[in-house]
Length: 573
Image (cartoon, rainbow, N blue to C red):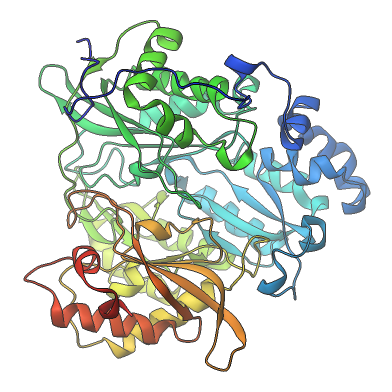
């Protein structure tokens, strides 16, 4: 079916897809040529990021940190999942005052790429072993379904790679201006209510395109999500491209295509193209979208180089037209929008699989685990009859294929590791970014601050029933790795002035954001209240206060987000 260009994907009238007047180069390859317009582009033009691996193995790992070329260290290392971590002892007030070199320690964060969040128990055990041997037992489950290790020395990186690759894992393009990890439904292929299994789509995208030199120089990072689960469990509204399971009335199960989502300091929710693609078509459509971004994305300014800005300027209709005519060579089929999400997308708890076995969703506290925990979890999963686990975009872990008779034993073993399938509401719904402990961009500490707040809220609100979830997202800087604009209570790290006039770590508060869920039909961004900031030490006090006020003054079954958007500012302080 040919799309009607006079309508938006929602059926509303659309402006014709006119090309905007240009005043100066945006660094678009297809329009302006490939002359680099900033230092990052110069570095990429001078040498492919993927080529740095040979130098790491042959030179830097042998000669040590001091031998690393600055453009490799601060640029190309990212193509292999490596960032220098923050030097200890530098407080948040100095984050914006010091150079990257002054902030950097001689140790690395190493990001293990885990597409679809899918791990065998053998792979999980190897990641845990690498953590204990090379990363001081550090491990964080991220909201991108990766595992991040810290304290890694460049001398140890080749050995880490060898051991990861021996079990089918890698760090290729885990960072950098590349196609990052592909988010996938944590219950792909096993959920009873699944619309379509996205596993083959994720596998083909990764197998064909990750590490492809033709796609390894993008304007900025490129994020992908694929799900066929009715809970829409991959935060598709904030990815560069997403494929969401739907049933076409004539063609059957497939995917609805979304483009242009992203948060950071300027949040954009993705737009529907109004196009239906089958599982067989999805990888080629993904390839077309990423090439549109490569050729037309804005490269002149790094802070405008994400796909969301191109989609915002072009609109969905023009983006679809360019994708179809210049990259796919055919029209896409019009298709239906996904129905509202059903059920929680974090998959916490014990659930029956379509084969009669169980999957068990476990919650750590704000994603912080350790190599020791990961190894023990692999042992516990195997004892319960499982050989597979999945990480989630909500910093959770799901054990698949559990023998029903061994569920209780798995739950008991998990509790000993600090993991639970029956978390408190705030433990379940709180996520946090890396924070000042390791991140050079951070201004405040996040993991321990959030964990302390969760413990306090569990104690203070123990007798209160929350019939709708309240999400709490804690971020150490404005860049929103913890998705602060899409949380009920989102906290953006900054220094705040205390009652004594002294600056202390704290947060600007965003209220009432959220992605589409079983409790919220439409996604939306949070609001800020003029002057509303809280100190890190006062975080639990504030959350308790605003939650109690919500429960006291809400309408019947009103969500926190709806209440926060209609309430006056005084009620939110």
